[in-house]
Image (tube, rainbow over all chains, first blue to last red; front, side):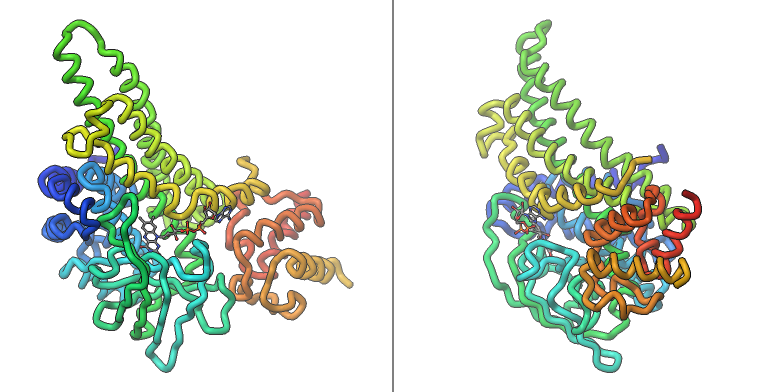
Length: 387
Length: 86
Ligand SMILES: Cc1cc2nc3c(=O)[nH]c(=O)nc-3n(C[C@H](O)[C@H](O)[C@H](O)COP(=O)(O)OP(=O)(O)OC[C@H]3O[C@@H](n4cnc5c(N)ncnc54)[C@H](O)[C@@H]3O)c2cc1C
């Protein structure tokens, strides 16, 4: 394994010093984690995914996911914000690197640490990210783009949003492009409330977006391509990374309870230590799953001649399976941690509480529905031969 | 009709039946991007199954890319390669 990027240790520090301190309040009030974001900006963490040639840290997917895992141990919602931001920057870095506009934008992002949000969901497409109703309307070198999104995490706190839409008003629903819209050029009207079970600090109500901009802000190529080789891989790996961070913090709370017990009866292994051995095994599988997929992804991405491999159905299947497996493992692991910690884990005001972890991780299987993903995998398996 | 023309014809029929395209498959230019005509990844699977059945071929995994299903011309190139190899 290559050496850990120093940014990962800085995330551990921010998780311990800032994110975990504010997490209970962020969760209670379903408010944006402003303190953590300020700390991330101070470390230039928001440009971690920007290639070095444009001034960023140029981190690969494995390191970015390790960043999210580290931050997720302090505050799941903060880490989800960081992950979603990295996903948007990844799309720009990997698909806009030949555009003078996006090169400049990335330099600006490094300097100003702009935060990017995402609008793939839309009223009327029922959770299918690969179809859009809205279309980008081009006149000369300007466009207008309006979208009614069901869920728009931290859109009210972002400096820009990547929006999926149809390429033209005549295009079929699946012929999409990704468009960057900037804060000064859009208005947002909140259309629903945000009082969910978990991931409360992502502040993700519905929004009506009205925007305009220069045609250069349309990411070159098609969303079919950027979705397959960047948006889906980045989403599933980074989410898996942060989910494993949340799960790891729950396990570490449970193991603190077990250690306290062991100190009281030295020489006897507490019965709950057996449960700890089991949950630790599940956590390892979960981590190794995203680490391996990310390492292979980075290897392929480093070799321009192999990039086409990422568009194979085999890879689509692997990303799907990673997402479903890790989103199911997360809540299961926290459930086991709760069994170990007992009442100390069940009480919200105990230092060993795993309530927020549990609620946060219940979003994992819904955030792109596992049933929807499994249906796609089932269809891919009709032709993939694993040869 | 040459065998190449027959292949082109069969591919268009399969696309018409399983591709759920926005335009009639018979009128689409050979090099036109099928995604712009509404070919989704889900429909691609059905098109592939029909091609495998019709031509008696099997697409190996490394050929299950979006590149192969870009246009009628790229599909035909792949089919020809597999038919010749079979
Ligand atoms: C914390 C959080 C943050 C989010 N942030 C954003 C954001 O920033 N931007 C954004 O655009 N979106 C965001 N989303 C929305 C997300 O991307 C999905 O669009 C959304 O979670 C899906 O909503 P749904 O369950 O209503 O829809 P669906 O996916 O349609 O699922 C509805 C139900 O239908 C079933 N179902 C659907 N399709 C199939 C199928 N093919 N086969 C079998 N069953 C099926 C599912 O089991 C499910 O029960 C966020 C979601 C969460 C939870």
